[in-house]
Each structure stands twice: as structure tokens, then as C-alpha cells.
Length: 496
Image 1 (cartoon, rainbow, N blue to C red):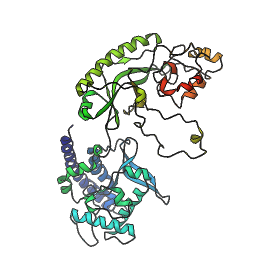
Image 2 (spheres, rainbow, N blue to C red):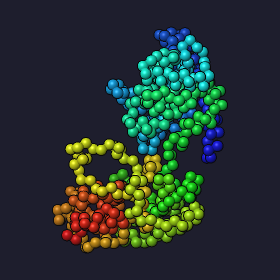
Image 3 (cartoon, rainbow, N blue to C red):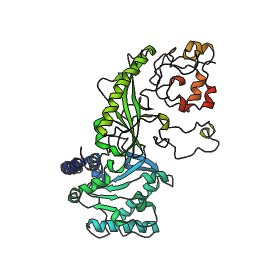
Image 4 (tube, rainbow, N blue to C red):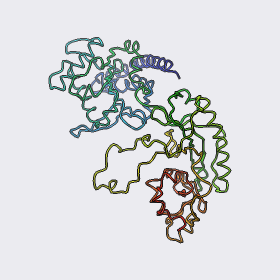
């Protein structure tokens, strides 16, 4: 869908939401009046209590959904998200939009449709420009301890918004792009939350966007879209995409490097008592553009299936290579970038990596993490695709090769490919895997298999493919040279 089409769809969704809410409001008020008259309610509900939930369901949810902040997807938008105030009080955000790295991006506070919009005491509705100036002045006075010139209800709401924003860490405040307060029929967007709620100075009125009525919301829908659309606030592009989608979003001139790769998708199949892993491999061309990784994947209807038998691995790699070479040519021609050459995996930039939870904080001195041996920082060559419900689907960046396994080990003859032999030497795990694990695709006695339990522990902190190959022999993996420095090869048990 083009940008113009998305904006049109947003305006259409707003109109439909206002129409539907008007219908629902009549029904809700009629039922409430009947309940009061019948005496089934001890006291009538105020408008806020009566309409807040319907406002969210019929006005705010459709607006957010049309902006790609789907309330049904907690990976995008979390309802009743929790935080803590500085005084230890538990906080609940009506809506919190998050990025792919779970960083807070959009904070939305919802009110009932009849909630009063911002205005001075003893005044009726005011214009949008005056409302922006009023809120700017009110926030400045809140920061200095003076009395703001807005309704008491709005003083409380602005204090709440300040509390919400200050509850985020310094890192999270930097990722927070917008703060919104809305009753559906009016909408206020704080474009710069840090300036509005954290910094000592008063916010610029031109960075507070006010929409005082449904008519104004519809009239200025394009501006609202530009301020709040998810695609404009965060990077929403997926890691993996088919060629057609890649041609829509990638500028050929911006591609700086190219690598070969594969998407490895593992599913468990068979009966409940005899499940075993089933693995599909798709060729991919991994492109660097704008400091990000994009994998153009050949999601064809006749993919390559990795065999379980080691004797068939050579034929599988040959078949995969033939298909992948054709796909590479097709992608480079479509981009008009036949000048690109495939780069070795060892040259993949170290700083292009998925954000790890807790990575912004150093471990405390004396903690388990601080005491554990730390492997040198290496390129991140294997990562989850991020596709929904695809826990065992990974992109493997293979560089100049088309697969990460070799047919034969590069080292000496070794007994530890076999579980029974490793067990007789006292270095096997207590029990065999019985070939029923999604994160392993080698079998005892395969040249690609390793059963040396001590080595499996040693390699865990450095292995690129551990999520998909828990028992792969290091000497049959193309990343062998990036995981082990020459001086460390003596630690491998091969042939000993």
C-alpha cells in the first residue's frame, strides 16, 4: 500500500469510528437511563465512567489500529502497561507503543468521550492554537511550582503525564517519541516529550498539536498521520523479505555490502510420541543499507530440505548452491547492482546487531555475569527472523558460502562424533538426545556431530549457530575460523 493510500485509509477509519461511536453512545445512554429508572443502579454513573471503555473500543482503538499501532498485538501496543513512579507507586499506562526492541515509543492516555478538553477555568471551548499556548504555559508553571491557568482536572492530568514520563529510565526517555492524551473527540499530541515533561524550560507551543473536535480531527487527519504513524516513528521494516517487497523499500544506491546467507526454518513433525525436527533452507542475499541488515529471501514453493542423513549432505549443498546462485543473479539484476561482490562473513560489521536485553547496563562487580569468562565481541551472524510464531526460524549470514556446514571435518580423525565412544571416554552427556530436539540437526556418528560435553560448554559463549546446531562439530562449520583464534585451537579435543 502506498503512503497516499495509507493516509486515505486512516481518514476513512476515523470517519467510520465516529459514526459507529455515535450509534453506540445512543444505545449506552438509553440502557443507562433505563437502569436508573428501574432502580437497578444505586446512583447514575458520571459521563467519564459511562463512556471511557466504549471510547477506547470504538474511537481510540480504531484510530491506533489505522496508524499501525494494533491493540491486538502486544509486540506493538501494550494496554495497561505497568511502571513505577519515583515514590514507589504502581503506574498503569492506558497504551504504550513499543519498538521491535521493546523500547517505549508512544504513550497514550485515554479519557471518556465527554471528558472536557483543556481550557482556562470558567471558559468554554477554545481554539486549537490557544489550547497549545495554554498547555505550554501550564507545563512551564508546573515545573516551577506555580499554579497553572487550566482547569483543576487538567492540572491533575498534566501531573499524571509528567509522572508517567519521569518513570522511564534515561535510556527509555530517549526512545519515547510522542505522548498523546485523547478522549476520542479531541486529541492532543506532545511532539517532544522530553521538552514537554522533563526539561526545565517550558515546551514550545508549536510542538503541542491540539485537535478540539471530531471535525478538526478529520480535517487535519494527514497531520495526525504524519505525527503518529508507526512507520514514521520507528523502523518497522522486517529483517527478511521477498524480492518484490525489498524492491519497494530498498534504494539500490544505498546498499553498501552484500553477503550470502540462508533462512533456516525448523518445525517439529511426526506423532506426539515420536516427534523429530524437519528443516527447510531458503537462500538469502543479505544486504547492508543505512546501517541495517536486510535479507532478501527466496521464499519459493520448492525449497531445499536439509537431509537427516550425512551421506546426502553433499548433494543437498550442491542443489542449494545451484538454486542460490540463480537467485543471487536475479536479485542483483533487479537492483541493477551487479557490481556488488559477496563479502566474507568474518568482515560483517560487529556494530550491526540486535539489541540484547540489559545490554545498556554493565554487570555489577562481583556478579555472576562479571565473573564469567567473556568471549571477544564477534559479528552477529545468526539471528531470529522475527516472523510471528517462528521461534525456530533463523537467518544465517554465511558470507561467500551458501551453507554453514561442511561435508567433512577439517581436523584430525576424532572419536567424539559418536555418542557411545564419547560416553566410553567419560566426556558424553548423561543421556543422548535421541534426535528429538529442534535446536540440533546432527546425529550420532555423523562427521558433523559432536558429543563432547566439555566442549559443548566451552563453545556455548562463542558459537554462532548454537540456537540451531547445539551439537555441530566446530571443524565442520564455516564459522570455525571466527569462533576460534589460532592460539586457542589446542583447546579443541579433536583427535585427542
